[in-house]
Length: 114
Image 1 (cartoon, rainbow, N blue to C red):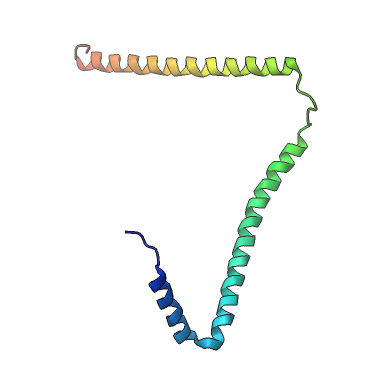
Image 2 (cartoon, rainbow, N blue to C red):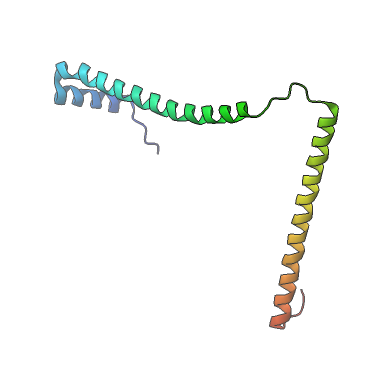
């Protein structure tokens, strides 16, 4: 079951608000709620905008390249290939270390290899 308020629940809330606050206070209450939501929205927008501004300023600080040359593209591909190879080598080394550790533990406990 969801926790949604249906139309009957919404009508009940409005009637209760009318009874509790009266017809003269409801518009003021609505304006206050709207003002609060607007301030909250602006504050959260300001926070995300600050983060975006920091990222933009970092990008602006870096010198911009007007044109990516073919040599730059080849260098980038070479670097990416080297990184992929290094990651694969590290993954394989980790697997080998884990297997050796398992074999060492089995040898220490006297269990035969499976």
